[in-house]
Length: 448
Image (cartoon, rainbow, N blue to C red):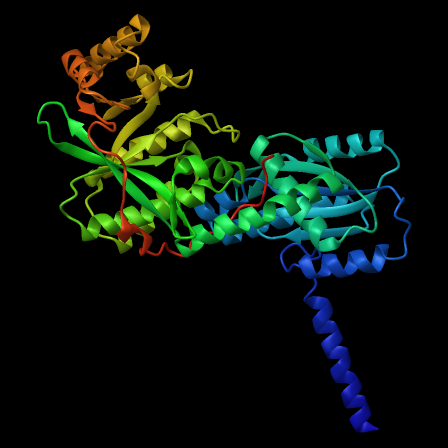
């Protein structure tokens, strides 16, 4: 009898332990395991026609708070936010939290008007200041809504809601979606996503170097680093993979891996005086400063050997221009060189040219190749040379492919020339064997 009671007590303890493992300890909401079990339990006998809606809420600035103020503040922030979510979604059938920053809820909604009203209340009510020990922190959220049926698979549902929540934050707007459409997108793109992300994480990528010549010395001044993926023993150029990398929002992960490999390569090849590396505005705004801190602790190189090429390619992230400017000044202060890439390709390059002291400006090849035939392109290059003397930067002309064009660019006063006339990009086999650090937390599929 005593043994039976002891055995029963053990089973009760195990049951309590299992229940405890289904909840997030910070918010008190279901975790992934709890959500999946609760969804099956609640909806397995419901009619598939029952009108249901899944709601995703992403705390957009929780990563910044963790990075700048620590976990004590971020946990207090999440507890406050989860309290608000619980009140606003008090009629929810399931409330879950998926670390580090996404809430998922399933509710019954009668019609489209009710769904729109709920979404609007969430967007307006969850924003606002958060007070912690006398300091105020802004609460910024992104909301997504998805119509679902009771027979959808809970794991796929979570994948869909994480994707939609990230997408809402990325596009800075409320997202409405249909489950079947989002599910199909994930099923079609997930294999490609996993393939590319695995290559980045495992280091199955490298870089090529293309020489950039000085017009004054007629010697190589530095090299441009160009990313390459390796598949089935073939070295792939960006034309074959970069569009997909950007679509799946893996570009920043690719940039991080390439930059690390470049650091290690420069440490081991001191005869390479300087290279230029392409970086996106998103990387500058989000992870570059932290990565440089970690890389420079591990790899000993002079920052002056690195020139960051910044292109003002439009971003859907609504990046604060002032933040970019501040981060670029920090890079210069540390000794890195800064180049403005693809000048003339995007409409606001002149604004960037004016407000920041660039070391180098690269003229987009679409203007360079035609200066012998186009008076407009010739005048643009001529004008830029005058500006360079005023602002104190050097100019690189891209896509120089013949002697006649090179000689004309020299007469105009261009400082550096880049193109097939001076050398094609050459893949650096050594770069393939350099393993990137395990720093990556890959984003979900968020962009159509």
